[in-house]
Amino acid sequence: MKKEFRVKDNKEFQGIFKKGKSFANRQLVIYYMKKENQNHFRVGLSVSKKIGNAVVRNRIKRYIRQAFHELEKDIKPTYDFIIIARQPTKDLEFFEVKKSLTHLLSKERLLNKR
Image 1: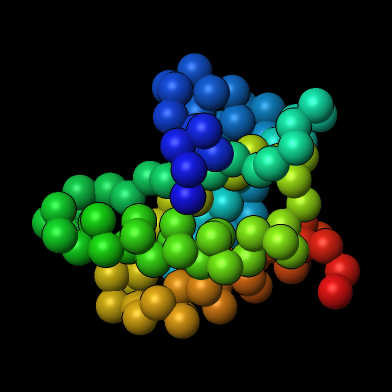
Image 2: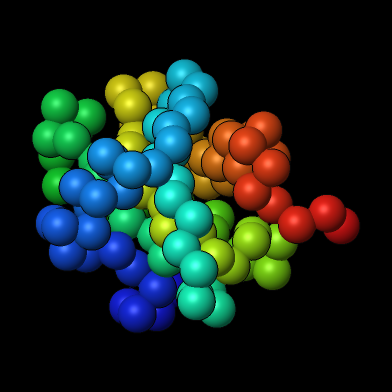
């Protein structure tokens, strides 16, 4: 995922937390906010140190980024997302992370109809 498609600034994170909506399942929490005048969605990731060491945290972030990359064509472009990984995520394989993310996005109707 290109860097211009990532939410990195703390002010943007805080704005999405305050003004956005949230939804969760056992593995992931998603905060999202509609942002007009945007032709591609942006993603911010948060994986706590409580989940594991740097290797585990980076693997989880890689899985989530790859899942977004594979779902890129289906996700509505005018949103900013923040994904927070929960404890059970450390034991998941890539396809389980992707399935969990797809579940959240489809529940909140953030995926385009196929």
